[in-house]
Image (tube, rainbow, N blue to C red; front, side):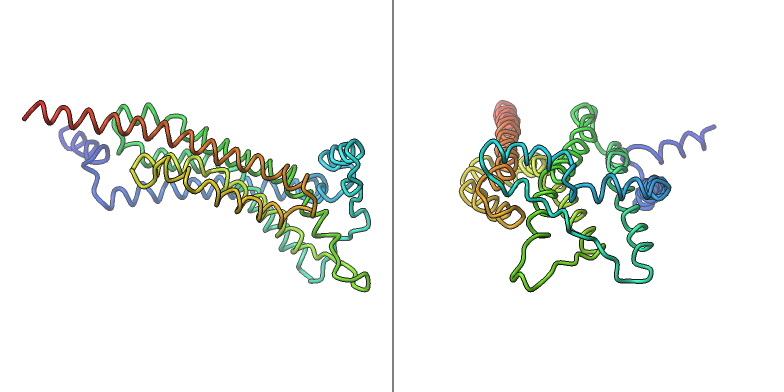
Length: 287
């Protein structure tokens, strides 16, 4: 009985050894991989639906974003929004190309869908090291982080990806050169833009932690505002058609994300400053 109790105490709390922590991390990692693979297998089962109705959909004129842009273009006299690349063909140039791409897309789909669970496993791993107050405040970590990432993926898929496909797919250095878009090039563009935007949307979370440990301050972020605006405009100019309206549509949400990060930093910095002042006051009173 005494032996079992001691063993249980060793496996919980701060008394866990380095190897215990490593073993715990290994199982969190294994469970995450299992979920990713399970979702990837599910994606392979619905392979045709995913490619036809999800991956290849943004290049079609009947895609919801393209229809809305066309309607908006008619209202504000921007004909470009209705000039979709209806003749753009996706080709495969390798014998095993389509099979390889199917597996790759399934793995990416599994990873994206498994993000909430992977973050949950990560939170479970660090939870024992938190005190009761920190655990209470961190309960929304998985929900907030997952929501931001998936919001970024959806924002890219429904706005950035259609604009980028329209522009890049139809851009020509000369009318003597025809565009034949390979399947792997198309998939790479869609997945890279979506995944990268999902990571960009995690910026408020990054700012929260960096402010909490004192690496950055709201004043620092405010000073960088002008540079951030320029960077956002450059990114929008690269991935969107050469018209101001498209750049604004992409830039405003990204800039709003930066302003949200400043607001979060201010709140965290204020709380951190109050705690430091209270601690100093308590130490002075003790002296």
